[in-house]
Length: 460
Image (cartoon, rainbow, N blue to C red):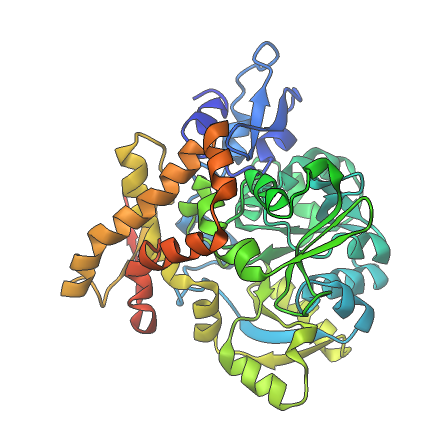
C-alpha cells in the first residue's frame, strides 16, 4: 500500500479523517460513499505516495500493547475496561448545561471549566450544520456558546481528525473530544507529528457502540413522511419530549415537531445500519483517552441516585478517569462542585459499556476473512477464559456467526438503491424481532455475568 485507497476497498476505513488532516499535499478529501460513510477520496495525480496517511490510519492497524505502554506505562489489569484510576457516575451542577445536554452534561462542563480557567484556548467538537442538519461539522469551540452548540452525540461517522493541520497551525492548548477510532487516530498522529502532542491538553473519549451509516437518515425521514430537504433540525437524542435517556427529535421548515420513540429510532434498527468497520472495533470504552464518558447505564447507580431525590429524567453520565492529567482536571472540577459525583464500581461501568463485546471481534474477523475483506491488526485478541471448554459456548458459536453475518450482508447491500428502498418499508418492530433471535452478541451476552476477558498476543 502506498496510500489509504486500499483501506477503503477492504472495508477498513473508520471515517476518522486523520489521513485527510495529515496529508502534506492536501490531496485527500473526505466524501460520503455509496455505503453511507465518509471515506478518503485521493487525487492520485498529486499524491507522491509518502505513506503518511497510512502512518496515522487506525483503520487497518493499531498496536494495542504499544499504545497502552506508551500512554500508561503498562498493560491494564482490567482487560475489559482498560487502564483507569477512578470511575464515577455524575451530573452537572450547571442547570443550563443540564437542560441542553444529552445526558449528564459531563463533557460540556469540563470544557467550559477549562475555558473559564484559561487552561485551554479551545476544544475540538462536532455539531450538525445550521443549514444542513444531517451534515457534520468539526470546529474549535472557544466560547461557552460554541461548546453548547455541539451538545449531544452524533451517531454517524464524523471525520473529526481532519482538523489536524489546523491544530498544528494554531497556538495554545486544546481539548479533543472524539470516538475511539478518532482518538486512536490522534494518538498515531502524535507519533508522526510530535508537535501535535504539545497541542493536546486533554483527550475526552466518548464510549462508542458503533455508528449509523448516513442511509439511516433517509430511513427516519421516510418514517415521518418527510423529505430530508424539508428538515431543519435533527437530534439523535433529545430530552425535550420525555427526558433522559432520550428519544429522537426532528423539526421541519414549517416548525412541525416529530418525536420518535428510542426503540423505533435507534435501538431496534441500529445494528442493521451500523458501519461494518465498527463491528471489528474492540475499543468501546475509548481506552486511549485521558477521560472517557457516556450515558450512565448502571442500574445500581440509578437506584442509589434516585433514592437521594434526583430525577433521572434530567440526565446522568458515567465517566472513567484514565491518566494523571485527566485526574488533575477532574479533581479540580469536583472540588469546585461543578459536577455532582458518585464513585462507581469499575466492573459495573465495564458491563454497562459492553466489555463482553470485545469477545465478538473474533467472530466478525472470521466473517471478514470469508468475504476476503480486511481485518484490523491489533496485535492481540480477546478471549473469555471461563467459557473456552463450555458446551453451550461451542453450540452457540455457529448461531452467533450466522447472526453476525446478517449485519455484514445488510451493510454490503446498502450500496444498492433498491435495497435501501426495501429497508425503508420494513417496520422497526421487525428489526427488533430479528435482533432478538439473530442477535450479534448472543454468544457473549450468554456469559455476561461470568465474563473474564484475557489477552492473547498474536503474531504481527
